Every structure is written in structure tokens, then in C-alpha cells.
Image (cartoon, rainbow, N blue to C red):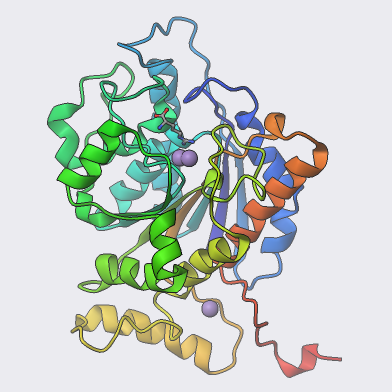
Length: 351
Ligand code: ARG
Ligand code: MN
Ligand code: MN
Ligand code: MN
């Protein structure tokens, strides 16, 4: 197993400067050193280079459509290649419009993927429903087959076609949903958990229902798209669209841990489902790894993870920026298998 890291220093999906420095601050917060503590090998693919187009008039109210479209086309190919080469990919944003490229590239290699979207926002506006014209509030609308006839032909995006069913998506952490977005969530019957749902059910039950919804019938690759503004602004202040009342540190880490635990003995999906024989072998492989006290790393079902919207220009102090970036690294580490209970090491490493 190996993990690939890919930076996407891009900000034209919204209007605030600084989010293009996300990859750098997340790396500066010690990402590579943290990843080196694991058993998997790490490949740093560096940062993509995005062109800034001179001629890019708004389409309807949508800002920088060709620039955002071209950046995502490039990202999509890079993600497809990394996943095809067998890596688990970590994409560092950048603003959340990058999910169009990240998820579509992932889907080209794994058409059966499911998407877990952790965010204060649903990011499912179309150009017609968007209150801001910002494409970072619209990436999911480019993905969903159910929205095909509601999406106009936006310049810069002719390379991508909808590829995801609304039943293959779960939202966690919502608390700022626009009227048009609410309409879509309801009419497509999308599974979502607002912060109020987390208050009522607890994060453990939320994750259980999430996996029952996405994985009960079939084990399949997970795309985790994690917007740092899902966290409470007291924990993640350096971000462009903070909303009060967000995830606690422990809720965010629990989400990440449970995603890592998919496909391992930590999580069983209940016994009431018939696994296909191949799926069973795949899980059994993972189980054997973990149970014989070898320290072999098991990837679980996480296949691609986005960490987006960390904006160092928006922290009130260097400390606020560092706290936000360190939090991003903590979520990444937990998604890749860091545990709060410690881990097995071979006896000869213990002095
Ligand atoms: N719903 C608002 C909009 O459409 C805010 C979106 C914020 N998105 C984000 N990725 N932070 O503009
Ligand atoms: Mn958000
Ligand atoms: Mn978002
Ligand atoms: Mn594990």
C-alpha cells in the first residue's frame, strides 16, 4: 500500500485570496513527518501548476468558469492516474471547487465509488440557485446525474459529465444550506446529517447510518471530501466561509477514524448482509493483516481524500493559522489509521 500526496494550490472557485496556500501550510504543519510514522510508503507528487486565464468573463453569475474548469480538468487527470497506479490519494486544496476534478478523476478509475462530504455547506448550488456565483459552492451539482437537466453548459466544463447517483452521497456537518440546495437535498432524498442531527443522534450513530447507507449492499471505494469549515470556527478559524456551531475536535477525529476502520475488523457492517465472495476475500485479507499483530497497514476503503478550504491569509494570528493547519493534519492522520489507543509494534522496537 502507498499513499500519494498531491497539492492543488487553487483559489478561483471563490473570491478570497490565500486559499491557494493551503497545500503549503498543511505541509508546513508537519504532514509528511506525520505520514512517515505509518507503515505505508508515501509519494509526494508535489503541487499542480494551474493557469490563470486572462479572458474569463462570468457565465450568468458564475465567476472564472474557464479558469476553474481548466484547473479541474488537469486535477481530474492527475487523480485518475494516481488512483490507477494503486495509490490512496490525498489531495490538498485549494478551494472546494476542486472536488469536481478530484471526484471525477477518482470515478473514472472507480465508477462504483461513494462520496462522504464533510462540510458546513452542501456545495450543491447550480448557477441558477447560487447566491454568490462562487463555484466552490457548486461542485456537487456537476457530479449528480439527477441534476443533469438543471445544469447549463458552463464554459470550461465540457470535459466532464455527471457520474454520481444521489444515493451514493452522504453529507455530514451541514448547518448553512441555501434554499435551492435544500430543495435538491429533499427532492433527491439525499442522506444528510446536519449539526442538529449530530446533536440528536451522536456522531457514533451518524457514522453507523452513513456506512449502512453506502456500504451495506457492497464494499466499495470511499471518496472523502473534507472541508475544514465543517469544524467549529473556534478550532478552524483560517477558512473563507466559517459558520458557528461546527464539529468538535473529537467528532471530526471520530469521523476520520471510522472511515479508516471500514473494511477492517473494527467495523463489521452487521451480520445481516450477504457479502459477495470477492468482497469477503478483500475484507478477510485486511482482517488477517490486523489480527496477527504484524504492523501491516490496512487501507480500509478510503481511496481518495480531499482536504480543502484552509486559508492562511484569513487567520487572525499565526497561531490561528497553525491551529487550523494542524487540525487538518490530525484529520488526515486519523483517516489513514492513526489511533487514539496506540498501535502494535514488533517487540524488538521496544527498548
Ligand atoms: N452556499 C454558499 C455559496 O454557494 C457558500 C458555499 C461555501 N462553500 C465552501 N466550499 N466553503 O456560495
Ligand atoms: Mn464549507
Ligand atoms: Mn465545501
Ligand atoms: Mn487499522
